[in-house]
Image (cartoon, rainbow, N blue to C red):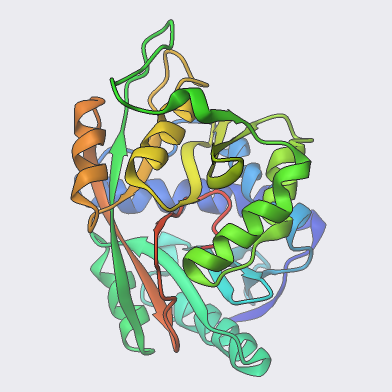
Length: 307
C-alpha cells in the first residue's frame, strides 16, 4: 500500500536516488547499458531544476509500511498545455500500480485545468506505452535519439550551414522566441527560455539564428553529469536547425551529447548522419486529448521536459 502526495523539499535526495536506481534497473533488465553513469546524487538535477521552474509540481508515492518514496512523477503546467515529466517507480514494487496511480492524478489535474497533456516516452518501453495508451494517449511524432562525438577541440562543421547567422541568445530574445514557438506549434514556454538563457545554475547554453533581422530558430542545451543533451529547439528551416545544433554541440568538446531529431524530417536526419550522429533509441511524443499542430520543426528534450 502507498499514498500519493506532493513532494516536499526534504524528499529531493530520495527522489534523486529513485530516479537513478529505477531508470538504470529498467535499461539493464532489457539488455541495455545504464543511462545514468553519474553518481545517484547527480540526479538531484531533476528536483532542483523542476522546483526552480514549477514549485510543488512533483507527486510522490510513499510506502505505508516504512515511509519510503517508491514512486515519483514531475508535471509541468504551462499556459498552453501540461507536460508529463520523468516518472519512476521502484523496481521492488513492479506491477503494484504506482505509475498508474501517479498518472491518474496528473490526468485529473489536466482535466481540471482543461489543458492538453503531453509527454515524450521511449518507444522501447512497451510497459509505459501500454500505460499511456490505455488512458487514451496517442503518438503524434517520432524522434530519433542520436548521439554525437564532439572532437576534443570542438569545431564540428559542415559546408553550407549558416553558422554565421547563429549567436548566443540573450534575455532580450525571450519574447521573440516565445512568438516563434506559438507560430510553429501554438505553444508558449516563455518562462523556460528565460530560465535557460539566464543560466543561474551554470549548466545551460542557448543560441538563436536570425534571418533578415528576425529570430527564426532557437536551441538550448545542458551540460551536466546527469544530462548532456541538445534541446529544446524550435525553428522553421532544417538548415537553420542544423546550424543551431552544431553551435550547441560545439559547447561540449570531447563529450557525446544526445539530441532528439524528428524522424519525419529526412533532410535534417541526413545532415545529422553527415555530422556523425548515431541512433541510440526512439522516442514518441504523445498527447492526451488534443495533440499540437506542428508547422515547422520542434525538438524536445528530457531537461526540461516541457514539450
